[in-house]
Length: 190
Image 1: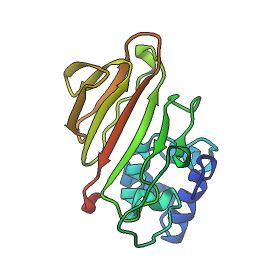
Image 2: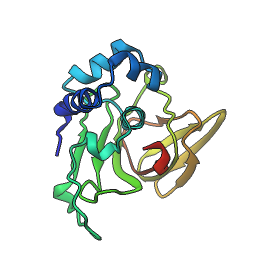
Image 3: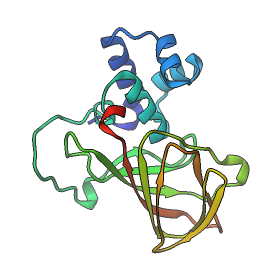
Image 4: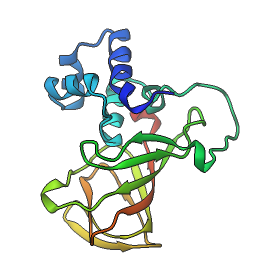
């Protein structure tokens, strides 16, 4: 499995194996060549939504970028101690993602436990990617913005939404928000 500092190298390896130039990847993702170069050479992984767009443009599943094996299993178990950290605290947005299903190949959903530190409004980032998403708040209180709509979510609240529309969260208060996040990307978009 690819650890966070190897994600960029894996993206580059896949891109080169498919003979896709950085410029072509930039055109396919609507990211700049400079940003994609930073992703490929950084020791910090970008947000999962960014990796979804890159995987889609490369014609691979996000699990390939994470270096997950393609075993044919009908069931897998990920113990709490076996969760795979995808993005550690202190990275670009400060989010911490823990993969809950990294052992299951060819999955159609990607579940994570996401820890979102308190942010100021200016620190927020809008996400947008193909598919659908669900967020279930495990701890904390946050504002969830989807397009021009705003909702307040607290522990135990759940939202399910079209992730093709720009969305983001803002923490309310001075504590981390912990949530279960499940991302579904249609097969045609992987």
